[in-house]
Image (cartoon, rainbow, N blue to C red; front, side, top):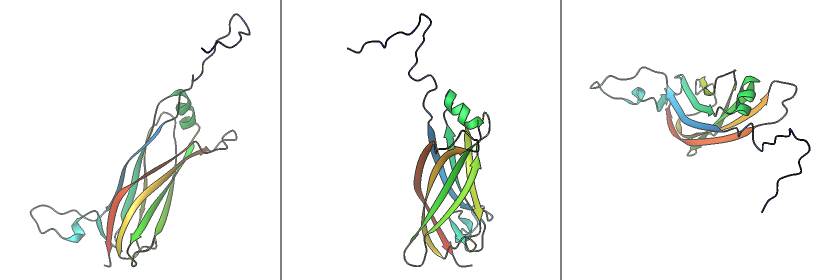
Length: 167
């Protein structure tokens, strides 16, 4: 049986985890072309799918990041913690090269949900026609503050496919 630690004074209080854990949840990894969408029952063509894009079409990659609302998390969010997201586009087959795209966000006081988005054109990002499997790694921290020196957490999410064709 564990014993209570030695008491130092009559007014001593002791808490093992007053600040609580910092929990980060990743969800909704998305990719989509921003071209016009089709209206059913018009003819559906590759250009109508947000997951099939032209190499000259603007596209977006995004991931949702949600922090819990414990006291320690509230402090870290308030300090302006950096959120670094690295989207990895793994080319499937020999015609589509592997491409890494990075984007950064900074937390704001009392905001616990973020959607971090990369927007660009495939040609400018070094992509070629082909299929891609997409994943994202997330690095939380450090904050832009003299007392913040370390990374607070990492995350990984995957499972989205994209097809790109030469326009």
